Length: 543
Image (tube, rainbow, N blue to C red; front, side, top):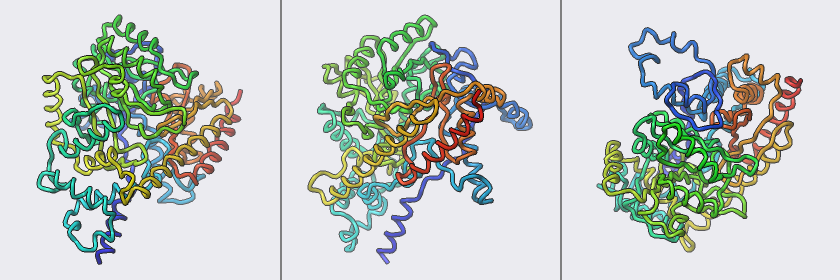
């Protein structure tokens, strides 16, 4: 009976997260100008984002008390391409396949649009799930059969976590920053990673990294006259959160020709242009490893970025959620906090917020919604305000908090779980590296396509040179050319990728983002589908 209970529990814990139906607010297409952007006009942020025409939306809800004409206009400006139009169509096609098998030229939808590993077949790390299971049902710890079912270090870790939880219950609220014992563990993990001390009181546990980003935007953005320097291409969370909180996105362009390099001279150029436009730039966002671009910054480059932020008095917002996802031996991940401390910069020199998540890395626990931010260089008065914002949401979910502590303190050599943990971790990361290389090579063989190496993260961002006839056809369809390509790819192959216009790109260039997450045995079929489609598409629209 006990064994069957745990088997059922294990099965339930491994269910695949279903994609939420996206609610996309669709606008007319705009492209990014190669200059600083403000939000003083109603179309400013939409210039960064891709969507199709929405002429029918306003007329369809006129009989309701809440319409698109009287909701918060900041919501209308906000877009999130990762779950945008192409994904909505994919979900409709998936329903069609269930209801009427054989009605499309493919038998399944392959979601390469989002970094959601377990939805595509990746299994969770056994040790992490053992600890979670024991924490959720602590009475199991006292049963005599438990040592035969769970590893000894998982049992020990579960006891230590349960003792730190108020009321020893994962269903209870915690401290607004997160359970103190778990923050202690995370601080020790950060110190072990960086070689510099970390204070658990600097750590705020959050439901994934996204709420932490929103919290920082809410803190920093007072009006549309406040700006945030963001990379282009960027992860749409940033453009969306800046729009929702009423600020201005100030773009700096990564250099595709140098492997998506981040040049400090570009930062200076865009900062000065923003100042001339009356924008007060408050912070710099850096995503390392890059999303959607997959580059890993060199430590020397990071030093220059830290010095730039110190000189200009900018808050450095370091998105480091892919820190475990580095696939090339010549590059290593270095946290910005480590780089700052190695330069001798302390809390009085630079203000830094670093973001980490349990959704990425080799763990891929997206649905558990765990993460944290570490804040340093903020005054006591401002820290009180950050704590107040965290308190409004009471606390992040406890399972996510536990996972965040496990991610930063996994099994060590000598622990019973270590060999299995290492095999699972290394197997996932090595497979991701092979998948990235296979897809990169395949994209570079396509006519008119160039793709930089994925040094890290979970994505490739190939550039596609589209024939003029295809661009004209996209214009006639009232959509961006890359969105037109992605829609056609979906209808022909069932493969879901995201148009580059949803992430931002240099005007006149077109891209798409493709994850490397489908299971390795499916990659050859994906390559074949895309290759066949691309040839037909280019032939159809060739001059």
